[in-house]
Image (tube, rainbow, N blue to C red; front, top):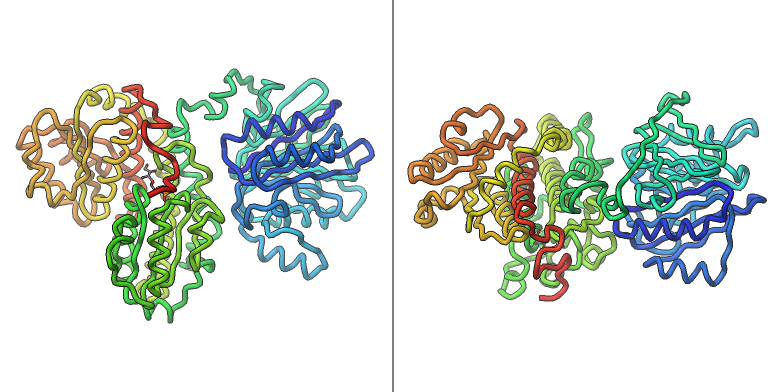
Length: 611
Ligand code: F6R
């Protein structure tokens, strides 16, 4: 995700901004920039595509400095990574750095263009700079007033830092659904999207609330609540060392990313779904009713965890849109002679957008005449560029090698796609679409509740981490979650694990069952509950140790299981999005208890760009 650092005070700040950006590098980015105002209010901006080295090089060639400035590392969401799209953005007197997503930017851009504004980037952020400049119509107003007026027109999420040529001793910040902190120094103040950016300079932080704005100057920091009135926010002393600050106090990046999931799913749904209208807007995919009516099938191509997202897509799309869906491991698809026609829709799912097998498979499908789409996290990655349409997940950079938030945002994306296809295909009426959209929207809050107390997983880890092998069972849309649970456990704890369709147990794996094999059974209340519950009883009858993952208040599971992990009650369509959190936490705590290298397990790479 993007990073922001800001400073106002008495010292020259170019080096502080650049070193602050270095501290935010761990978040991942594809371009960066700084803007600094000198005492006369002249603002200079320096930006570069690529790594900070490129920015530092560009800055060294034409250096400038001053006592107020902004720095930004950008992870592209709207508009490709490039110098022009890098932040800060300038419009008239106003310079802005922004994290988040402005949902209504196209509408605002159209209106601003009609009023004569000229845009120099493809970003949603530039709209904010123009709006603030436009709102600042009256000399009695402050930059803060204009910023608040502009924010009234914006829908979406933002952490904003704003400076101006008119008022070069004030830095204005705002926060809504994207983190922003401000911090006190001696005759100076700092702003940052994350604590580590300025931890070398101060320990006195104020964590802004959603809807807050703040005015920073040499004299200090004034915070305003969402009604525009001054508010007192507690100053907190942060004692973290810089490394734990990067992990925001979590022990591992993987755990931080598990906890980020509610916010990243919200980001992925943001601006794309309307419960009121029962609509999903995925204009980026260029799908219409004629195209969908003409499809002979959909083929999903992916590897690893992304392949399990594809398998869940099959359950979702076949159920809701009644279109035949095949899923293929990309490495298998590319070396057989697949049946694909110009009536086939081939969809690659990939976090990185660079996985060699997935790329080769989607190319092959395209060459065979299929229309190609992708569901990708990294903007402008090769798969995103090479497919006819791309649906970006907004997971932000995933640093832990084992995929967590990338997976749940893929599930949110395929859920939206299923609803879209169902509406286009006429198999889903508006009322039914509304229910499914509400179900997707409900997920982040349910995950937040599950994340409030995870002590049960630590206890399970203590009891079960000496096992040599685990079996995971699930039916229906819980079958791919059983496989994902097993994959997570083996990659990070190095314990062998297998995911199996519960109905297949008696065709072989039942022979393995004894006191030494923990069996994780995914059995939430759903259309196949009775069937899975009888499999669970079969395991019990053979002396197996059962960890059941089921719906809160299910007494039957209590009676037959050694441990029960409770899930909130949600519609079957979205059950994988909540049950996967349980298997992620189980794997994480077992690995943590064993003391393995959770974030960088042996032999694994984050992006598999070779066959
Ligand atoms: C598992 C994991 C991998 C990836 C796989 C595909 O935790 O992360 O199995 O899912 O290598 O990667 P992408 O999604 O980048 O194509």
